[in-house]
Every structure is written in structure tokens, then in C-alpha cells.
Image (cartoon, rainbow, N blue to C red):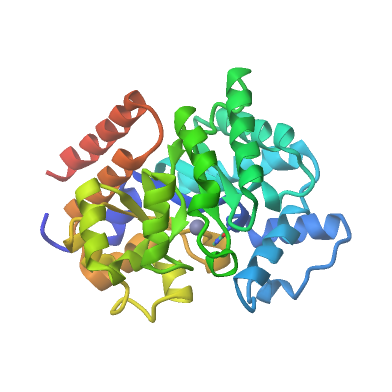
Length: 338
Ligand code: HPA
Ligand code: ZN
């Protein structure tokens, strides 16, 4: 059990992913097929579609991709294909971030119930839940509209796979948004939604603090720049706030590589961390690739990889019963190792 994990172990390991954007997970072949069918030219050649100047241009590219989707049937197919991708990665469970602002052809009444129903239909492939995301540059009122929509939909029995809330987008453009989104997050908490937010990536440690203090998040997407403030690292560990870390994504936008990424330091400090891809198609990675990268560079053992999956189970926004079932599946994987 103390040897470094093998590729075979990583591939067979039951996995969870909690930080993956639907918009960054649409296969390039699918994007190209949809564009060609509708006679729409790409903003740049397909082989460099994701080679963008900055985060703003990247987000515009996501808008372009999502606007290729015009009918509920296209969304249903997308959701099904996403579930197959998750299963092929050995995922038991996934929480996928969906930002409605990218999907210009759908109102909330269509987008979220269609995706929720499609993931329900694909639940025997993989258990997938949805975290709608506020765009960082939206107003507090727009954020509250999204949260109130979720409350009203749930009251009508719609979109049951929507179980949490995030904020994504560009923190450098928007500045701190904690105060602006605090009323929406308070309402989301009252509705029993799980609370996460991007922070500590395009913002520094102050962005993490902002999300903790104003949004009262249960966990954070990225959060890695908390490492720049030792007191904050202690706080994350003490309060058990999980960071949904994406090493490849961080090594494109933030760090030079494994020697400078704070993953081992966060783990060592007792901060709960999970392993995620963020935008697998954009970054040309998969969850299995991310785990292999971690094992290669930080010599993780099977027991450590199992512990990372346990951390993810504990950080999910599904109910206690579903968490217990996920832990049980991990128990079986652990027993097989012993
Ligand atoms: N940031 C990074 N990746 C993303 C985002 C974002 O705001 N939205 C979709 N993929
Ligand atoms: Zn993200």
C-alpha cells in the first residue's frame, strides 16, 4: 500500500469530480459538427480554438460554442455524452458547473430542467448533479434572480438535479464580488443549496477570504492562492473548507509546474483538497490524466488517492444517504486493495 499508485490502480479507482464546467467539456468534434451543420464559422481555426489572449476572450469563446446549441434535443445529447465521458473516467459521481449566461439560446426554464431531466435519464451511466453558476460580472440582482428561479423550480418539482451554486468568470475584471452576491448566497443557503465559488485563482488570497466571509461557502473552486496567506491556510484547515483543485488548469494560468504548485503544501497543511479538471476539452486533459500527473510528480500512494476521493465524497452537495452510498463504494475499492 505504500508504493506509488500504478496507472491500472488510477484507472480502476472509483472517482468523483466536483469542479468541471459543462461549457469546457464539449468535445471539439461535437463543436465542429454543430457549427458545420448550422453553417457557422469559428472565431479562429479549430486547432487553435482555445488559444485565447486572456480569460475574457476565453469566456467569449465559450459563448460562441454554447450558442451553437439551439434546441432541447441538442442539450439532451450533450448531457448524455457528458455522462458517458464521466463513466469512462471511472466516475461514480460528478457535480457539473453550468453558467446560464453562456447559453444564449435558452432561458432558465428550458436550460436547467432540460439538463436536469437528461442527467436523470442518464443516471445509470453516472450520477451527475448541476451547480448553476453566476457570472462574476453579473449584478447582485441577476444573481438573486437565478437563485430565486431555483427555489421556484424546486417548489414545482423541476430541476431536482440542481443542488448548489457557484460563481465563475474573471475576478480581475470584476474585482471583489462577495458583498454583491451575499444576498443571493444567503437565499441559496435558505433553500438548502450547497455553496461554492471560484476564488483564489484569478484573485489572490484576498479573493478566498472574500468568498469565505461574504458568501459563507462550504467549499471553493480552485482556492489555491490561499497558500499566499499562512493564516488563511490554517483557517481553511480548521474550518474544513474543501478546495476543488485543478492542477493542469492552474499550471496554464498560474504556476510553472509541479515544483511551484501548492498541491503538496495544502495537503500537508491539512486543507481538504479534491482533484478536478476544470475544462477538460479546453485543457486537453481528463480526470484520469490529472491523477496520473499527481502520482508522477508527488508520488501519491493508492491510500492517498482513496483519501482524496473520500474528501470529495465529504464535500459533495448530495444528501447524507447518497454520501453513505459513495463511501460504501470506496470501502469496496479499499477492501480490494487490502
Ligand atoms: N473560468 C474557467 N473556466 C471556465 C469558466 C470560468 O469562468 N467558465 C467555464 N469554464
Ligand atoms: Zn472552474
